[in-house]
Length: 101
Image (cartoon, rainbow, N blue to C red; front, side, top):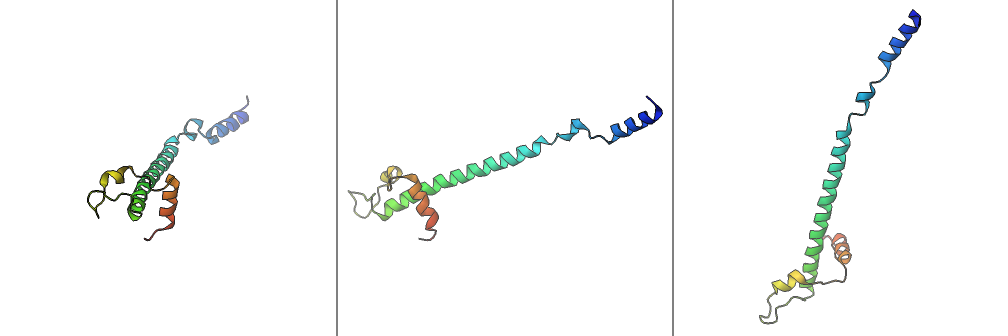
């Protein structure tokens, strides 16, 4: 190799990107995916809570859990197991579209 070629090669080596450090930022992607999964978990948890609350609200409004022994009272055991509508998505749909009661 001539001196000119050595100078050109050394200039090229110095200007080339460091491939070892080029893709070393993997943790940023992990933070984004972790945040997305946590937010998805919170949305699912809130949806389940909303479905249960709407199920109990609808059962109370339609008087499905009236206590048979004490008139005017509510059977709390019935509220835990009542299915006031056929499907869970009906509760979610009603609760999301009727924000004020």
